[in-house]
Image (cartoon, rainbow, N blue to C red; front, side):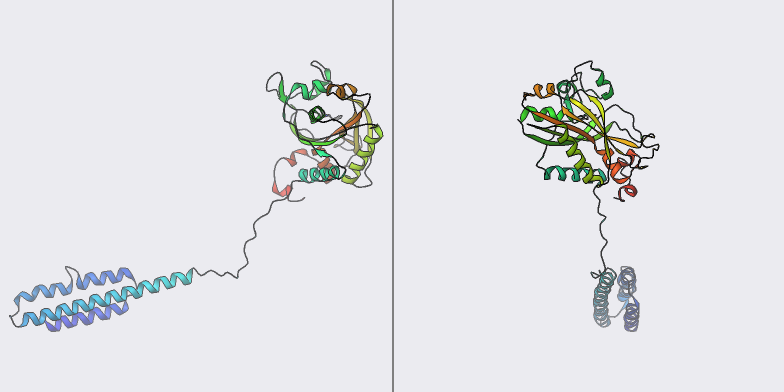
Length: 339
Ligand code: PHE
């Protein structure tokens, strides 16, 4: 029996040295020390021993059991340490590797043109005024000399909230807010979103952007208007840019003009973009109508003013040679990344 026990001890040690895995170690523990294990089986057979032999063998069996247990515990610690070591080695972080640069966005081409225009006007002492996009009929039409049933309302059909409240069709509504709240001298621009019930195509959108300009003071003339426009457009498009003024009608300016720029697509030869004209319409302008000044409590006998409203989309398309307005709204990064 003594021999058997010593053999078990030897066998257990030999197996232990080969094990490198926690599950195998547990299997080994069960095999030698478990309830149905080899050592237990021998100890069960001790009943048949003599009274002298029993304590000797018992002691030996207990010692061997304790030794095997001790060695299993030690081996387990070694296996765990090796595993965590291997894990650390596998997860090692090389802090000297170059990082992944985050993708940075870019300023939208319309914002670029807007910021340029704002800078030009701020440099001349203008303020930037804001007005509501949801507007009373009065500010969008009536105070601008467009009473109900005025035929010019047809060209600016819009979205109505109630009969009296609508989405503004033009930033000209801000002229009225500004003149109601401030006395001349007035020098403002007012950029913002405007709405018209136009279908979307290469040159129209039901939502687009305008920049309104209003100057009211003593001695403001058509020459001040043309000088300001000429300076603005040369700063945006370059010294060689050519504009023309065409007589036009707006109910809130008198005289009125439409301002065209030589077509940026064909350079004036005539193409589908300018419908063969050689020019594209850029903005509406004129001298503030005396009735509009009077509507806002400004004496038209003392003061005069000019106003213009330009389309930011058109300005941007002209500046960058974009031939379809829809590209500005689609947020396609392949397009936007070019500017
Ligand atoms: N509000 C006009 C439009 O949208 C443009 C304009 C502004 C004309 C100011 C004259 C003066 O067509």
